[in-house]
Length: 389
Image (cartoon, rainbow, N blue to C red):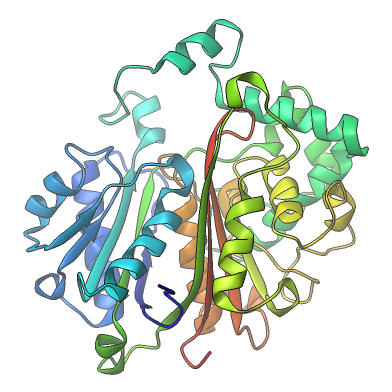
């Protein structure tokens, strides 16, 4: 069963704050839910399905009760940073199958406040793979991406200067976003001068750590027709889990090699049709490998592809992350897939910051990467179009 045209994104909302020490995760979930529902022109009583990750209490059970939702369908898919791109696809599938009509998806996290001694943070027992890998220096998130970057450099000649172009593009966009965590435009030289964290990745190759949240409302075509709000059509969705394969891992590609083609086929479009991309940017190398794996350039050519302003909006060959992305704007609770979809919706509605609005943006792609490209990841790709697409 195809989901093409079977569901629409009617509401989108991103929490404006990047440090939220005076709220609980539950309160942030509720705030962004109210924002997205208001954006759609709907209310909490209209919601009959709810989607979130499992990081707050019992996930959808706890939050449905907190917000007083009466749900006949819930989903707590957990794939790290890509979870909320998965949720968009799963919501569309549920609507297409007749399980629900109005699906609310919310994200909330306070890792920045938690690190500063506030309430929040994660939990749970580490799995066997985490314990084993932690013994050999893989405990930190940056390590896995650093070894992937070094392998990509060895195989294809990718350079630190090329990776820095990704950060530069994100910073040029973030300067126009009043809520972005980092708003100062950067040069390649400034990125290269930032402190080394785990070779070859420097501080400015890494995403920001912020509090925050966001929400989306996905509805059936019947509901969409009755709304005054401009909606965005879901055209295609793909997902894949790539893992370490008992040590036989190839570090030069991501799960996008599977999720991307599935999404493109279902949407009935090609790379040449995409006007804008939201690419998960936990690290600069994540963007370079993902662009290759989604087919925007040949494998190994990602570093060269991002040169010469390719990613810079509004007139680059492939404008990306016009809100500043995870590298400069917002990366709440290490689940930046939510913000990727929100910015794609803004672009298609013509509602992003004027300086970075892509002219006549008709088709957009959002991609999430969860876990680590150095070990195991959940990858999800969603292709969206204007409501008349």
